[in-house]
Length: 319
Image (cartoon, rainbow, N blue to C red):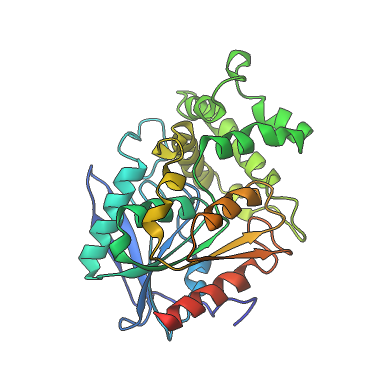
């Protein structure tokens, strides 16, 4: 392995799956067809799967399934313009997509792994379908709560005051005390492409700032791509402006449903955008979970990849 990840690999199968509401989802499988099934849920919302995500999985152990969630990556239609209907892009609909994909691939049960937003999505999925989940490996723990969204978009201005003032600069004065993701969502749907592009750029600059305290941090190159910015920002602001389409405390209130599912939770000590208290609360509510706190990592970085790979290998060998 290089940098704790397995060598680059091409999928042994891939395709486009027709979902509801005119959505078509890109999916792929890496590893071996007879391997332990594992589902990977990417972050964002709206990031899409990267080539690097394939490298978390030992190709001699796993049948790893990755897919691009609605509106992003290689799925279609892309959420890249103001005329795209986002009302069909909800957490409940993504859960339906996951089940549709599982049934299409003929998988009875699988390990579920996810990062950041993929953690919240994975927890909601496992609470809805615990009988389909063998175990879970989750990294950069999030709970999809309004408190977390408010922390990232407003309260963290106390840590980065200059950068936060730049972040809210595009937002009209009379909207700055309200729902900032919703205000940005309106900017990103503005008829004027200059307004949309500036909002996408400013949002992504803030995304880079609030993960910047970990050792060895460097800016993310993905935010240099205007096409990525347009898709990512439309989806993340859409979900965050609706509290990730979850009812208050939905995940914490449903933790009892995961009592029989073992899990390894990985979190970085320097993860300022997702403070450790969320991971701690979920771990304390989940007797079958193990919490691994990496002192050299933030929202990734440091020894984060190593910890995810070790966790996946551990649950994969015991499955």
